[in-house]
Structure formats: structure tokens, C-alpha cells
Image (tube, rainbow, N blue to C red):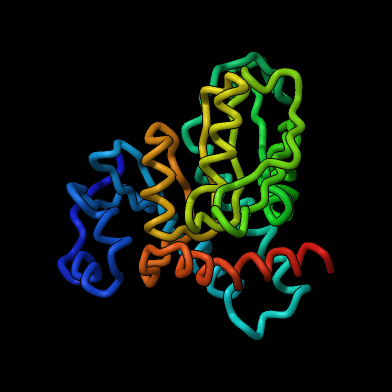
Length: 256
């Protein structure tokens, strides 16, 4: 069993520097590390897993550098997609099957099902999915296209295409940035309306206000991310500002 322990005071004290969004997220919550995954669970019963694996943190830092060129960015983006999905699928069920190796027949573990469905939020989400399919070639892909209404800031759907067996799949929603949380919430709402019950959200970067808003509607859906942007004040303007450079890089890297 993985060892768990409470955060050091120096880590918890960061809440003084990150504004109302962090305060809302921290309310009535206990923060602890489990192995290499930092988990936040609280009154909303939602969980956020910040993957602190050294390779994830190193590659994400390289992605965010101003001087990172598009060819390098594309490679890093593919690496991040693989690493994030690897962590998010850690608890997939297994069952034994009989195989014949060069010496004898023997039982060996394999994925037990259900099918895995990857759901990128278009457009930037699709750039991350490519490497995820390299990791799990048997996965199926659904597509959700959303844009944010400039006046209401609500997510508006313009595209939805999914496989026939979507409701039975173990489904992973891919959103590069959980900023206000509205796009991810709308995507998960759409999938729940399609009778999907096994849902996980994977993103590169999340804002505290976005986490709070998302889990306010979907407390049952875990979020896996490479980083939480504690500098966000929690306002829509701040969340969009923190998201702009990351999403712009994703779209730029996927087009070149």
C-alpha cells in the first residue's frame, strides 16, 4: 500500500498567495500525498489528482517555456498524453486469461473491460489524444465540439459524434485546460445524458475555480492533471488569462 502523509506547513501556507479560488477549493478539505499522486478530497466529494511524477513535471515545464519551438512542443505534448493516461488508468480492472508462452500454458493478466473511450474536447483536446491511442490502440474515440459564448461564458455545443457502444465504455474526457470548468462540465453533462456512467477528466492544467465549478456539478467525476494554477484569482477573466497561452500553444503545435 502506498504511504500517505499530510502536507508540510510550507505547502499549505501557499493558500495566502492564491486568492479566493484556492480558498474555495481548500474549504473543509484535507490535502495529502498518496504515492506520486496528490489528492484533494472534501465537502464536494470530488477528487483531483495532481500527478507529481518527475517526468510529468519536467516535460510540462518545457511545454510552458516561451522559447520551446513547435517541433519540440509536439513531441512533449505526445509524451504528456501518454503519461497522463497511464496514471489515469491505474485502476482499470484486470482478469486472467490462458496464454501459451514459449515453454508452457499459463494464466496472465489482461484488461477486463469495458471498452475504453477517449473524448477530446475539440479542437485542442484532439492534439493530446493521438499519443493516448498509441498507448491503448483498442480505444474508441468520441468527439465533442464546444465554444464559449462571449457574452454568457457558457459552453455551446456544435459537434457530437460517438460510437454506438458509448454508454458501456469507461470514458476519459480530454480537455487541455480546466479554466472556468464550464466546457468540461458541459461535456460530462452531455455524456451523462447519453447514459455514460464511468467518467474521468484528464487535463494538462487546472485552475482552482475551475475545479470548484466542475465538481459543483459533477462531484462524482475525478480529475487528473499535471498542474494546478494556484496563481488564478478565481475570476473568469483570470482563468481565461491563465489558459490562453497553454491552449494557444496546443493549437499551434497541433497545426504545424
